[in-house]
Each structure stands twice: as structure tokens, then as C-alpha cells.
Length: 171
Image (cartoon, one colour):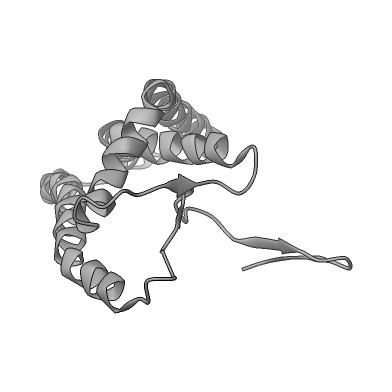
């Protein structure tokens, strides 16, 4: 066992290499997702349009750069989603040499289950959006005729910042 112990610098070099591979996977996914970010946004808006029941929906943005940053955020989230198998594989390749053979065999099912549960979370979110269709209709039916809901184009993917004359506050 003493002969198999690597010095700290070897571990750090290995970690750096694994992080570079994972980040290259995210970068490649980002390029692909940014090229299709408008289509991804359209797909993500479909459940809201469907929940409105065919009513005309106008999406707005309140700053000139807002839709561009929304596209960047969507591309980054999509890149992490696409690169997850690469990221998980790199984690496993870094951790596996330090595990015994039986521990490695026990680790693999958890690695696969992580990805499957990640996908299951996406399916669950789609089901939740579908279930909210009735709630949106109920809300809109109760509004007075003089009020009309307007949705912003940006999804809440980051902190909301408010700038006042004295300071900037993010929540």
C-alpha cells in the first residue's frame, strides 16, 4: 500500500487534469446550447403558453441586455446538463484509484443512479408544470377585466438586484 501512495503534488496534478476535462465538456456543451438557446427558451416557455390555454401571451424584457443574459444562463444550465456524464466520469476517475476493488464496484451503481435521478427530476418538473395549468387558469379567471398578467422574458436563474441612489442590493 505504501508504494501506491502518490505524493500530494501528483494528486493535485491529477485533480487539475480532471477539472480541465470536465470544464472542456461544459465549454463544448455551452457552445452547442448557446447556438440553440433561442429554441431552448421557446421549449421552456411552451408549458406556460399551454397553461394559458391558447390565450395570446406577450413576453417582455425590461432591459436591453436581459434576453442576451437569459440566453447565456440557459446555455450554461444546458451545458452542465449535457456535460454531466463527463463530469461524473471525471469524478469517478479521480476517486477510483483510492478505492478498494469492492468499493469501486459499490460506487458505480450510485454514479449511474445519480444521472437517472437527475433526469427523473426533469420529468418531475414537467409534471409539476402540467399540474399548474389549472392553477394559472383559475388565477386568470379571477382577475378583473381591467388587469392582464404580463410575464417577463427572463427566468429567475440568478439573484435579483435592485439599485437605489445609495446602494445596490441583491436578494
